[in-house]
Structures are given as C-alpha cells and as structure tokens.
Image (cartoon, rainbow, N blue to C red; front, side):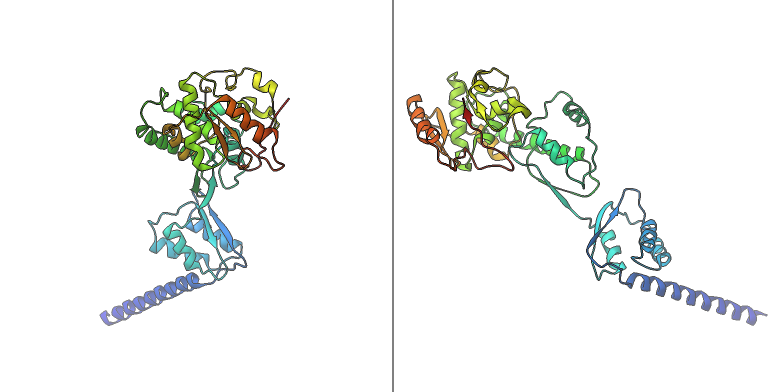
Length: 354
C-alpha cells in the first residue's frame, strides 16, 4: 500500500515537473518570438494600461502570438514591476523579450517642445495647441484662466515662461509643460537678480524682466545686449522716453501688419514708449537668461540712441545730431536687403512709414 502511494506521488511529481517544464518552455518560446513589425512604430501605453491588456491587444493586432504565456510570465516573474505610461518604440526584428525589457526599464520615447526667445504668449499658446503629443487641456480658456490653473491668478502671463527645449513623454498636459517653464523662469530670474549690478533703477525683479523683454526684442546680435541695456538704463535715469518700436508693436496686438506708422507712434497706449514714460506695464515677450543678465548688468557708456544698420547690428550714438545722421545713413538710404535684426521664424521686420 505504501509502495503504491509512493509510486503515485512520484508520478504526480513527475507530471508536475513536466508541466512546469512545459510552461517554462512555452514562456521562453513566447518571449523569444520575433514581433510582426514591418516598419518602426510606437506602442502607446496609457495610464491604467496593464501588461496583460497590452499583450492581448498586440495578439489581436497580429503583432505577437501566445499572449497567454506572456501574461503568465509577467504574473509569475514581474508581479511588482511598474509599467510606465508613454510611448515605446517598436522596430523590425524586435523580439517580445526586447519589449518586456523596455517596459522594465521604463524606456519611453522622449519628445521635445521648444519655447523660443522673443515669442509672446499668443505664440506660445498656438505652439502648444499644435503639439499632438501633448494632452490638450487649455483649449477655449482665456489667458487669465490659464494662469489661474497654474495657481497664479493675479499674474499677467506675458514673459512669465522660460524659453528652452523641454523633453516630455506622450500624455503630459500642455498645462504641466507650461508649469515647468514658469518655475524655470522664476528660478533663473531669482538667480540673476541676486547677482545684479548695483545702482539699477528697478524696484523689483519684475521690472528687470520687463526691461529684459525689450532687450530681447531689440537685440539683433548677441554681443550688443549689454550696450542696448546700457542705452535704456541711461534713458530711464535721465527721464527720457525709451522710444522702442517693439513695445509699440506689442501694444498693437493682432492689428499689427508689419509696418509701424507715425500715427502708431503718436497714439498713446500703456505700451507706447514714444508717448508713455518709463517701462511698459508688463513684459512684451519671453526672454532668455542672456537678456535678463544684460538687463541686470548693463554696459557702461555714454550712448543714448541706436539705429539698426540693416545687417542685424546697430549704430550707437551719444547725441541726437549723431543719431539723426545715422538714421539718414542707414534707414533713409537703406539697402534692398535691409533688416533691423536677424529675422525670427515667420516674422516681418518693422518699417516706419507715413
């Protein structure tokens, strides 16, 4: 009796071992299979997706076989493995084990989004809305609503975001990307403010940011930022009007058609620095660290005027007579390819007309 029981137990153990061996072989076989991929593609993993569900989806699409054994493998071997949402790149010749490795390492595809120096907030929102890899949550919201969602309901959005290239994974919201840019600008501005030169006519970092935005829009060649900052600082200190075209253009908004008329220059608005003294009420564009640094470290000198030469650089002058001569030389007799600064993306250089 005991002998029979031993035989039964040994047979059961053998069958169990054979079953486990078969199951292990089937799992290894399923993992080693080449996926049916003819060209590079992305597998999107959304929040809440599970490996079992994804294996089923891929089997239904004909990309792999034996999803049962793959689901069993994950359940037995990787029960606590986190599955990161995002996109995973699938390439021809890839095996299922390679995909599992990507999931284990969380190697999601990184996309990039660039905010450009000199963009205004209208351009920022248009660029965000045109990025299909971002989750769109801001459509239909006013600028004030956007700032409220960022937890800054009392702040004007212009110039409050740092221009840079930001990496993100599919599914990140447009709001979260803006939040990153907002936090980054705050950090850069605070750092530069702490290291500022003495004796500047700013009451707070925000005024320096406003000045930096004007410098950003006026600067055609990088090495002139400090000179341009110096001109504007000296004009402020002497009580002179800043008289800078980019502020007038900003005040015109969407009605600006690429040409500034003398009527525009004479019409008072909060942003018209030909008629309104001091800084405008807000920045007029996003600014890079270099423009902020220039606003807080203006170059010493005596020049109070500058005019675009037509190659992106400027002629600086100490007196109005010198400036008028430079205007006659560089603008009234301008060359055919004249431009006030290197042309940014899809922009038109301003031109003053009667």
